[in-house]
Image (cartoon, rainbow, N blue to C red; front, top):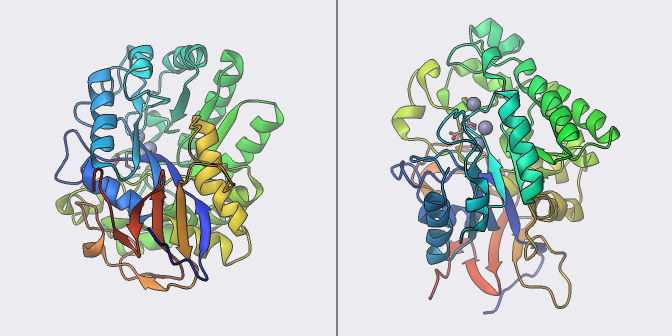
Length: 395
Ligand code: NCD
Ligand code: ZN
Ligand code: ZN
Ligand code: ZN
């Protein structure tokens, strides 16, 4: 097990708080096996698999399956995220305690892709979560403010006739849930922060002593709404690509620690659901294999973050937020070896068909990035060597 790391950067294994692996239900777009390969290639040693599968991960049957299957594949720890309610937009809290006590040891519950808009349900979920010692992750969208199927706004979108997901839909839920968390004495985590206003609200809530954390996606750090000019549905995502000023605020927020971490929101969709008219396309983008490269080019290259900061936002903070004791550790003598090696001078061009996911459509097609993950080590075992998946469990 020799690793040639001359001129390379050694980082703690990455932790993704927000991945959609589509198993069970949509294995034509991603499976736990294909998604684990994509995660390992992206430098991840732990991912959190979102609950909007089919069936929804609202029971211990589903959450235990996700954990077990991830361990069988053996490329990355696949932590199941439980649904907050029974079923999509459910009115009844899921059995969080049972999922937390299962083999999958659910540590985080979410409404992502799923939308708990009822403030009373969110308030009860937050109270319950603090007594269980688990985290509530909020998709942050007020659905009654999100008009129609097309989720974009801003001057560009308005000119193009794309309307639908105003900033207020996100920011009103961020403010609401910060206050609910305060009153419940609970923690809340904001998924995929996308607006300058959310960054301001995060500063305000922290100033009030509220236990609130937030993530930003690589695509919201890189892309803005000028992409929508082509009406190409490959750029459709929840929350939508916003204005350049939002991108700048998110980058500064991540640099300052107001935004805690990067999470991919890796959301694979079938070709026919992305290569169609914008209004009927599904929202979501592949993210696992390009995340580190995008963080480097948007944050390290312009001097907003150093490599210490990359370790913080890709590994240490997410592991702390969600309570993973064996991940996100600084690289020190005596620590378990969950490691990622990055070549900082490995220029590469994205080709969707070469990505490990079942779905191959990506908004980053033909884009060139300056750095790349070369090696990933999970508990001392090499899972990726020279950019190729090396060992599955038992090999
Ligand atoms: C998510 C998905 O595809 O599961 N899509 C996305 O654009 N982030 C669900 C969601 O959060 O809307
Ligand atoms: Zn979401
Ligand atoms: Zn939604
Ligand atoms: Zn998501």
